[in-house]
Image (tube, rainbow, N blue to C red; front, top):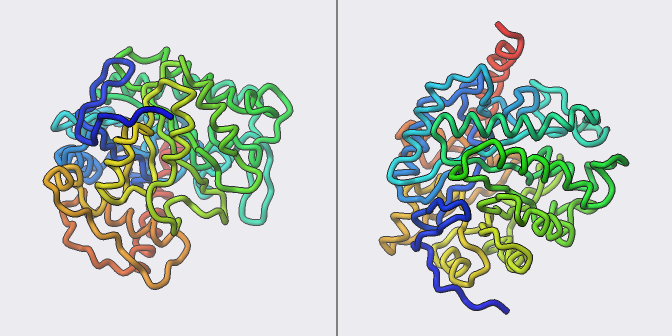
Length: 398
């Protein structure tokens, strides 16, 4: 039993590389879907992260940023490659780090879950379901992944961002390699958990070697896939132990996957934070600072998690969409925002509602709080269709 922490939500956190976060409240990555369809930040996205920085958080994480444009999660993803608009990225880095906030890019590769209208999904193994198909990556393709992540991280450092988060959760590529549900390989990248985590470890090592020591390298890891046959907590703890000594500055614990038909963590009906107990077990295996993301809605929950010593920081996303000044609100002792309730919820409806609400924040028009759910879904889908067309033009070189 470890001692209760003397730290609180509003005390600074010093990361292993010496970087200091001014408090323990982090805006965790969401699929912002605010890129311009060519992979560049928009004025709305830049303003959004500026507003969050002004609201008093320690760090924001932008999801999801692709180094390889062939495997996006959505057509609104950012792409940080040789074609990127570096001026727009620099402006995002500058304004999103106002008020001593850190701004980190979540580095992704959707793999088998790549967006079908603009991709040919490829993951650890071939998969063939009625609504889900993916080809298997070759050994040569797998071996290019760590350097691709490293190159993207190097770009991020050069453009003024404070760090990156390597996305190994929620069923995307690195998470797929960890999961026996996705990974049926029989080579050095499949089989035991030590083999399934090989690509993640190689990617972390490549990224750490590519960036300055004061640049933050974080990892987002599933505690469990929450699917029968997926990554278990026991296996995830082995990954936690293996990350020790690899130069990781913050380990973000989450869970669930966007595999078709799977319940996402964000749609859970359970009350309270989701992954603090897993973090407590992980604490025994690593000295890496820990963050839990999922289920934090009230100041008291976040404060209790940090004070218990189980986590060093808390990750919230939807709370920040409802109140962009959430840390300032909490510090002033005011109540947390009320989460919306819908009589009926279509698949993806909640994600669409919050995504369009994010757009409102970036456009300084958060007065639109009563958007109809069906209307939000229609807006969201229409915007994706428009960006798919733009994305295809970029990919074809026009």
